[in-house]
Amino acid sequence: MKVAVVGLGVEGINAVESLLNHGYKVYASDIDPNIKLKENKNLEIDLGFHDFKKIQIADAIVLSPSLWNTKVFQKFKSDKKLLSDMITDHRSIFTIGVTGTNGKTTTTMMINDILKKSGLNVLTGGNAGGGFTGYTEIILESKSASYDVILVEVCDMTLDFCQNTFDFDLIVLTNIGRDHLEFHKSFENYTESLKNFVKGKTVVLNRKNEVFGHSIEKIADVNYFDKISYEINLFGKYNLENAAASAKAAEILEIPEKIIETSLKEFDVLPGRSASLKLPTSRIVVGKTDNVDATSAVLDEVEFPVIILGTPRKGELCRFDIFREVSKTNSKIIAIFPGLDDTLEVARNILEEENYNGEIFNLTNVEDVVEFALKCSKKYENIFIGGNGQQKIIEITNSLKEAISAK
Image (cartoon, rainbow, N blue to C red; front, side, top):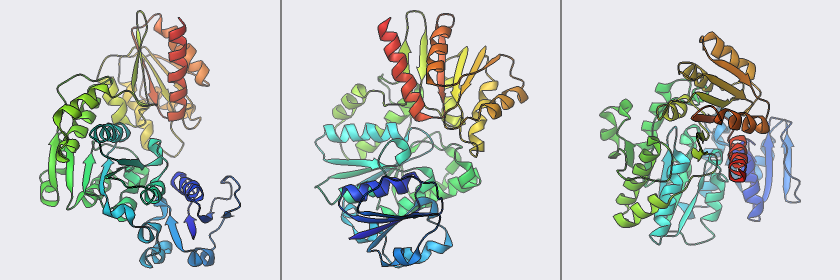
């Protein structure tokens, strides 16, 4: 069987790798001529253009989520040749989707742990931005073993794609904030997409998200959550909300309360997510906060005299609001480093335009960030490292742990 993968963004590249790993032949194409894929005898690639004849003669097609609503590719969807229409094992398995602006990966893995501790065989994956291997891997893996539950992290930019690809029985909506507005065009468009996504479904919804008003109850079976009442190993009140969302989902699946509580109390920090590192006289909180709502949630916890942030890509304009947000704090120092792109000048300009009164430092790399944070920790009680650049933040966290343990 030969599968055409059309569009080689993060999800497309992951789809190619998954298909090859599962023994399929693949034709892959993208209009970007600079994409790099590993050579493979079962892989044929066209870059700079799409060969529609090759796509048409393929046995199945994987269409990139970014191309999902483009007119030129609608025919392939109506021909019922999409991989999710050709391989349908996943559609008969109870499926939970976890989406929202922040907390998706943590909540997904909390639910995963609870369900596995209850004895269920769980297939977990989805959004490659969350560290998983993409949606295609779930489709392929679902036919390889007998699963009780499929658990899918759904990126807010792939709602339409996932709605067609999976048959969701339960949707967990962690929270609704402002991110990827370059894609959605407006916050109102995003909320409308969410309403369409949850229509007719059983939904777990954050009680704080009143953006839906009462209309949500007319289109879905809504189950609200707040915060859990007991302590867990994770930093921040927002993780108590993630835990409450996970607990509510597990309750709907009739998992015993004792298993839920034990699992959540034992749950540990995921790579790149907010960790609190204690030093003799100070604390460094470090974790990805790649939009203004995620950053605000951390800053609401405690006052940070030192804030160190990774910068976003050039085109991600709404994510630069992070720097407008931190400029309003009483921090004495804001340091910036290249997170996803070297957009330090843009970030610095925003801080200066917002009349930030503290000192601004430019840092070059992971080593600089670690050294600067440790130096500041000798003088200041609380330091926060966050922003964009998940991989770099993971490296920073690991380096800090090594440095602290060596002291």
